[in-house]
Image (cartoon, rainbow over all chains, first blue to last red; front, side, top):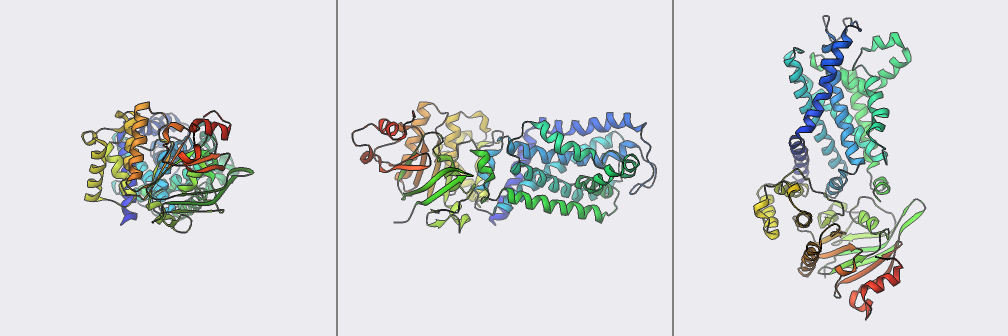
Length: 263
Length: 239
C-alpha cells in the first residue's frame, strides 16, 4: 500500500540521516549529560526534595531530573527539525516530500513520527549512559517509557512543524532559544517539582501547570516508574492535536505561507 | 491527442502584489516548452502553483487531464519535477536517494530496485550507486535529480531553472537530454532565463511581471531576430 510504503520510507530516511551524522548524536547526548552530571551534581546541595509521586522514597536530584532531560531531548529535536526548515536547509527535500501523491497530513505525520523516533533513540542512548553512571530506574520502566517518549516527541515535533510554518524568518537559533525552548524548559517540572515552584511564585507555578512540556515530562517520569498518569497523557494528547491542527493549517496549500517565505 | 500540461487563466497575488496575471499555456505531450523570463517574472510562483506547494482560486491547472485542484493526488502522480533548489540527501547514497523517492510514489520492493537500476544505467552511473551524493559533482547531481523525477514514469516533466550553477558542458548535456525526453513523448515545461537553452522548434512562452508577453513556436516568434535580442526588447531586462 502506497501510504504505508511512503510512511516507512520517510522514517527510514530520517533514521539513515541520523545515523550517518555521528556528530548530531554526540551533540544531542552531550547537552543532557552535562545537565545530568554537572548541573545536577552542583544543584543537588541547594535543593531539598520531598517524597512526591511517583517516587516512594527519597531520591537524588539526578534521579529527579532524568525524565526532564529526556523531555529536553525531545524538545530540542522538535525545534531543530523546524529550524532546518526555516533555514531552507531542508526546504528542497520538504518540497519534494509535498509533491508525493499522498495527502499532506499523512506526509507531515510521517515526518513528525520520524522525528519522534529519533528522539526515542537519543533518549535510549541517554538513559543507558545515565544508568552506567548509576542513575537507574526500575528496568520495566524503561519499556513503559517508550510510548510516553514517543508521544512527547510527537507533540513537540508538531510544535516545531507549526513554528516552521508560521515563523517566516528567524534571525538565529537564539530566537527560538529565547522564546520557545527556554520558557518551555524552565517553566516546567523538568528541573524542579511544581510544589517547589509554588513556594517561590504561585503565578509561575500556574504557568508551569499549563505548559504542555510539564505534562510531557511528567508522563515520562510516571511511565519510568510504571505508574499511569492519565492527566498528563491527556494534556500531551490535547497539545498534540492543537499543534498538529495548527501545523496542518500552516502547511495548507490554500494559505500559501510557504510561498511568501520561499519567493 | 492526450493532454499534457494545461494552465488556464491562472492568477496569483502575494497580498497586494500581483505575481501572476491570467496566465494561459498549453503544453501538449511530446513538446518542449521553454518558459523564459527574467528573475522575478513569476516563474517560481508558477512552479509553486504547478507543484501544489500552494494553490490559487483563480484559474485551472491540469496535468495529463487531471485537475490539480480537484484530484491533486492523481495529478501529482503524473508529474515529475526537478526543483531549482537541490533536493538530494547529500549524506545518503545515490541508490538510497532514488529508492526513497520511489517509495514516496508508491513503488517499493523489486520494482523499485529495477527502476532505480534502470535510472542509474541511463545515467551511466551504475557503478556509483553506493557512493554518497556529496561525492558527485554538480552536473551528476542534476542528472540524478532528473533521472529521479522520471522513476514513476510521469507524463509531464517540470524543470525550474535546472541548469543553474552548472558548467557549460553539463548545461548543454542536460538541455539536450531533456529535449530527447520531449521527443519521446513527455510534455516538458522548462523554466529558464537563458536564451541559448531554447531551440527554434521549441514552444516558447515569455513571462514578464506576471504576464505572458508572447507564446508560440520559437522560430515563428523570433523571425530573423536573435532570440536574445527579442527577449531583451520585450522585457527591457538584461538577461
